[in-house]
Length: 385
Image (cartoon, rainbow, N blue to C red; front, top):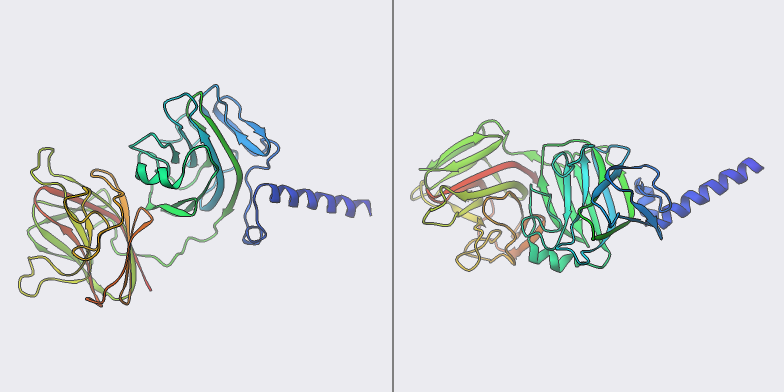
């Protein structure tokens, strides 16, 4: 009898801890578990800097020093959820971050991935995967203000990384450097107050999301070129340069979803034109001149507002709702076409949602717009709808 009473008491304690750390009944059924128990630092270790403390069920950073705390366990494929609160105080910026797949070193932002938290760092604003895929500062100031609790979710499934903050996806990209590591929390510098709560995690057993590679990362099998551009494969990316031209898939598509990582940059610093590019879909080579612009839809890639359709626009049809990208940095683009319903997402954020029935089927094509632009495209995947 005493044993049953002890078991019941222990179960009630676990249930109370789960509830205190934000676990809903649905999350418990799905396999989430608390990553922080709200009372102690069990399961956590200080890898650099001073001790963090537990206060009112929150994990609070050491305001008098820099450093980071991480889990003792490692995680590969997972969904991590939690909330953060940050205040820069009298310092120059409110800087912290959530490390994942991080190695146990003094520099986990290099030796792993970091979801950045900063509304002053224009190069790596909140939601950026630090020094890898940036977000847009002004947009993140709208989504995740300081001095309030902000909910986040990091989903890491193979190379596919997605980050959602306050219900809005701000990253949907592919990264291949790290497959496994610890979860970590950063105190970037003294004077900043940063707090975390309701940390919970679910390990993912499978990463099959139905995506199929459209590019093998090695050569141009399954693709063919028109026009003057020169196409090659370097470091796992398709590179287009040296003139106007297009690289078409041999396969045609009707209802589908496409995602890819893209980077554009000028051929040289003093190029007379801004880098300009696009991803065509439901497209065919021009029947009057196959070396000219294709016939079909184009998702524009142009990172300069006020001069043309901006990145994510459905070219010559619908302007993207906001500019989220810049030259020289990788970003993700996702195109969803089902019947006449066309949606375009940039870094996980929907920028076009329209109806247009001009083209029902066709090929995917990468554009090299002019000899002054270098275009790089990698991690090209598709799935049928």
